[in-house]
Image 1 (tube, rainbow, N blue to C red):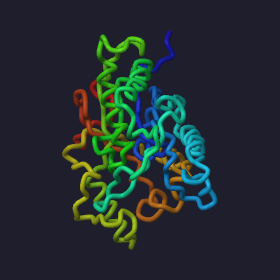
Image 2 (cartoon, one colour):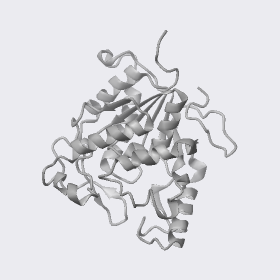
Image 3 (tube, rainbow, N blue to C red):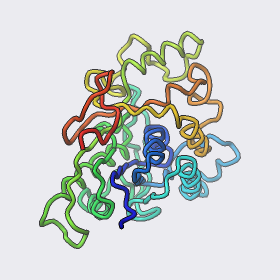
Length: 303
């Protein structure tokens, strides 16, 4: 009898901490259900901003050891979420964090200079083939990644989207690269999403509490741009309220990137309830049965 879980979820994220911020509650929820959960991380986050002053020597322009440190942070975060199957795309350090800078409109764009093996510059087919092999091994029914904007424009998030979507397509082709495993057709692909109404609610609470710095320039009734998804375009929400404390613990594990007194842990969101529900858009497959809110409550709905 096989020990392989009947239901299998695979998530593709760009850097350590992305998984906890966007899908930590979802991952822990499915682990607790006994489903298979596989996380694929595309880079070690070598170019991340270091929030701990005494660790500044790890920066890319100094010792350049942040990637190794963040791999350790991710290992701790996975223990908090209960994830036992984590992969680095191509192996640890195969692709490097591409870095980013902020556009005057408030979203991320490509950095002026990138490393030779920056993930954003990777050959799409070569990177996708690395993921094809994982997909054909794990054989997930559901894959989760970012939308075409990568959530906020980071070039590595956009590349993760491209690689994931192409790999899903290639993995299903009966005649494609059989050396990478038996073909497998992923039934459903979801893109992570931020509910527009939830974001406006959060901003309103922040501004009422006198916080004008968090999401500076974004106002509750203003234009939120591509950072959010209109509620009518959402497909699914996963209620992770029962595991939200583990999500917050996994976030805290990413100490170099997430401030313990920052937005995730203080102010208007100190109750953590906001972070317990995670939203998704269906990009491939058929919508399953809907819950009371008009959304799927299970990413495996209908399978």
